[in-house]
Image 1 (cartoon, rainbow over the protein chains, first blue to last red):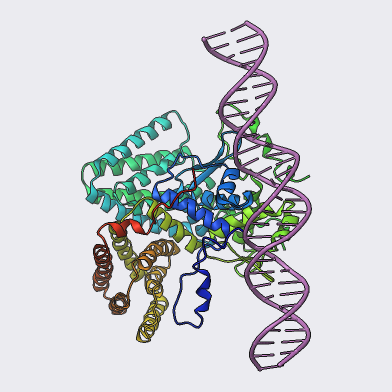
Image 2 (cartoon, rainbow over the protein chains, first blue to last red):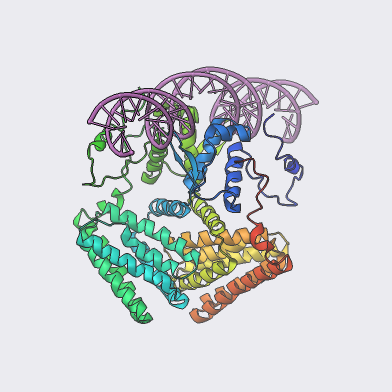
Length: 274
Length: 274
DNA sequence: ATTAGTGATATGTCAGACATTTAAAGGGGA
DNA sequence: TCCCCTTTAAATGTCTGACATATCACTAAT
């Protein structure tokens, strides 16, 4: 008595044979897809907000009238998409979160590796896109966000003084710059690219010196922004990104020419698979 | 006798208490995460290529020494990420594919809706990014891809003559343009944005007239490219994108002013959930 | 040669069970 | 009263076994 009740009207599409009309592809045949879609709808509509706890797997299974396994497969999807997080233990369970940007970034990184892109591709794209974003940031002139950028750099300086490593904070500057455009589309793009950058910084084990010089570059860019000097900001931004690119190439060269280009993917281990 | 054999060396990390050193976050505690990571590694390394069939769920379970359910949760992840596709029935099972760009696009669309972006944001980003991409395409001067674009438009014209609807083919032009830059990073960006565009075209029920005028715009852009006239190409491209944007606003206005802005998300249905 | 039927295969789902993790409640000592 | 330790309950993570369902490949009948 499960299914065949909420997708009753779409079944008879098969009667339309030949290629006269094109129907939508009969979405979500599988139960777990319908469940994840339903929960996603509730998040989109605002019924479920980040922080809200979802019922436990068992309860969800009961409410949807499916088994726990089916619910779990739905949760796996929502989890990977960045809509929910799951915690074990008492008072654990699925919770609505909003880490979709991280999910996009992770997939972006996968694509980067799968398509065997190079740091040169990355840098070229960064130069072009970030300069364009900087232009839009000047147009939007969002002084509040500019202030946040300045605050972030002061925080970075403090951490540098106490020699606290801050690998990732270093990239917030760029994401905030995208935010200053007031167009979230740019934020997504920047966050995606920064995920790839963060990956390189992690793999290449960038040191304090690199972080410090990046920090100083950020300050120069900010100075130019606050002076309203767009051309100077553009020049400083491009110099900064190109400097980071030179660092990539230097590290790569110092550790077996092309080794570093493939290492992060990891070699194929003894395959137990087919 | 399952587990506690391939993750033996990471267990003792817990001895490092206080906050002296920072460890990597002990990746993939859950079995299905390790499995999906392992299969992903094989795809990255080239051991598994698109078209290759993976063993069935049962066999995978046996080889990894886990249950079928655990394998399934791993497959759900790989599926959503666009690394594999799964088919039912005899000679079915998981197959390696490469639809990661589609996966990124889908997530992009989710983010678009979740963050409640507007078509204006989309259009502004498109104008800025596509013009930038066009510039890079001129630099790369990839005549082979330009020829593909021409061929695609001729095909579009043929379909128009026979009044075969071609909603999505219409966007190939832009993706091919990104491809002409020879930088895959731009292809990912364009594909992501085009997924959002395609969604609007689907929701707004684009008509033949719109497709035709877009086709003609594409031809004008191509003409300019083939003439080596970059400024004209830039102007035509911008005009084209802005024309599409006007169409959005027209359709939106003609069907309850702001209704169309929220409808695609779908209203919250009678929630059976908390 | 085309069509209909049949069997094998693999996914989709259900049911029940146990292990493990984790937070919160409870209890004892200072 | 406060803190530490233990207990306990809740929830996920995983296993086993089973059945339903979809689909391809093969076969047989027209």
